[in-house]
Length: 407
Image (tube, rainbow, N blue to C red; front, side, top):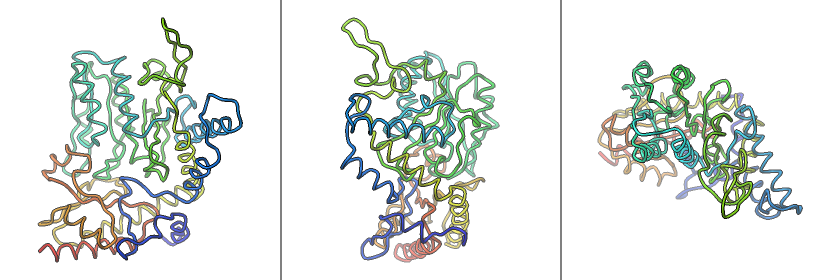
């Protein structure tokens, strides 16, 4: 860990400098949302205070500046995930909004009664419920690719689940509960052999993995800004141009039209066809700033540090009697979910909170996984590259105190 200057990194994040209940904040809820570096805070503040005007509409100075920053952000994201064209980058309100957009528009164009959609047992609710609603609306069937006891997707069962009726396969790159990195490239290859397009939920994956959508050959990829050290309210839907061109708009209004009359409306081309209304141009600029920050500190070094920290955390947590970590399959990221015998997750979180330690507990927006492991909830500690070994020690000591108090 000595090659990564954690002190300098932490100084970039104002939120990490505060105290909670008189104790230094130990923030271990990064899978839910990450903290923002100062450069992102400044970028957002600058636009709110000085460079604020609606985009794509006016020719005055502020509008031009905002439009340029918005489209520069699109190009930054295109390069970041190696999309082929900027028009394949659609700005949304986040991962959930992106999946809902796709579930509606793809469903309208391609899904009919009797068709099938595949999701996995490891999905976040946001990658299950929109597809359930589509199936109910169209009379389609939702099919499930299961996980085993280690949290590994049982990809060997995929060939028998894929059929001539399968219209799309939807899979998370990294489970927000188990932290397991799924073999998405293999899954894509299997699906494409059956001419089935694939959506990758990259909300957790893009934070911990280098993403090249062309190398993956995925048809769609979605992620959120606020899990990538950027602002809330901004996200991305990447789609291959050949698919996006065929899909109808999800929402209608300003900026997504070419012309309107009372007899006929024609729609704008990509990407504006899917960006109705006033876009979150400030959020887009903030997300691009976060990506530039990540690249400036060296994403490879940050991820290497994060992996070392994860290994340390797994070893430290394993010293606690009665604690079970879920998601043992490798490779694994820094999302650690566990239970402790005789301790309710909410009780543990409440006690840890008073010690200044922020973790997430409950069903983690993954009821299907809780049912799979026969649990009412879990405790989740999710690490980022700005966390430290000392914070892991604080968590372990806090959990030991929880055990003493509860027993």
